Length: 137
Image 1: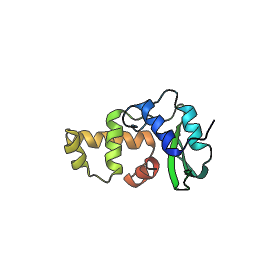
Image 2: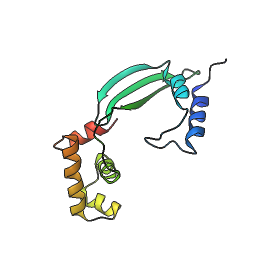
Image 3: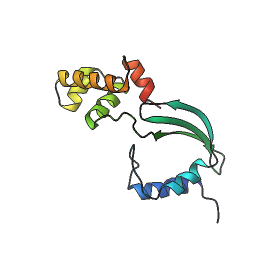
Image 4: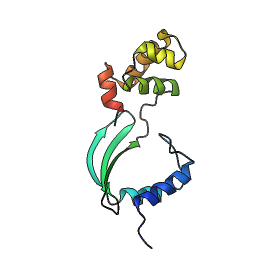
């Protein structure tokens, strides 16, 4: 069996997951494809995150073009944010203000403040900087 190029493996993964790979997408039968992609990679860093462990990996394609990517292994019993809390956390990680987040989400600033308090409590952080460090790759 001939070795597949990175482009071929990514194309197969996309076909499993639809037209676009979504963040946190669950793709059935993707394990063998991901194993081919990750197999020749070396680990650059391992970090503990709110959802589990993040691994930053580095590899090269057949044409020796280097690439890096981060994958997160979700641990059972890890803290899970609601969809609304995750959206607010993502906006905060982008550097948005509470007023901007409220406007973008179509809710009141007080609702966003409440969600931020919940996020900080669940993730055991006390600042936006700590939140970004925990959630960003």
